[in-house]
Length: 148
Image (cartoon, rainbow, N blue to C red; front, side, top):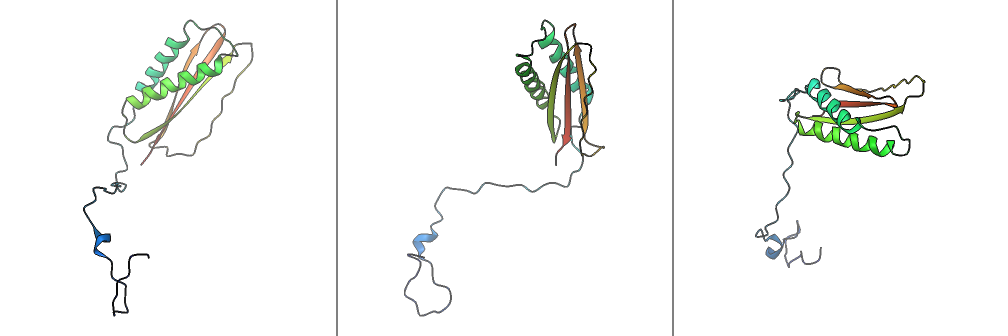
């Protein structure tokens, strides 16, 4: 409270010096908008477009690849980043995406992939794309969740 009190006989709130009330500063507060009451997206998600794009990315990246356990994690990460970027560039309104890519060696085994989600069945969806060679199978899962 240094510099706020002036000599005054008034027992209420202390007066404020005029130099503290200078409104000539150019700083402005950041504007925060409230949520809208819109429950549906303007640009509704079209899963066939993302599926085709993910399939094209898998084919492009993996058509000449052979299975290698050492390089598969980095390959999965780069493919998932590329699919995520492609999904965001499509401009579907108010969606958040999660992309998972699995590369599994073909060794005569069975593979079960199980996922659980809690979401709105009317607005949220998922897409899968698969690419298969003689040495491995690649599976991409794309989850699109509506975000208000």
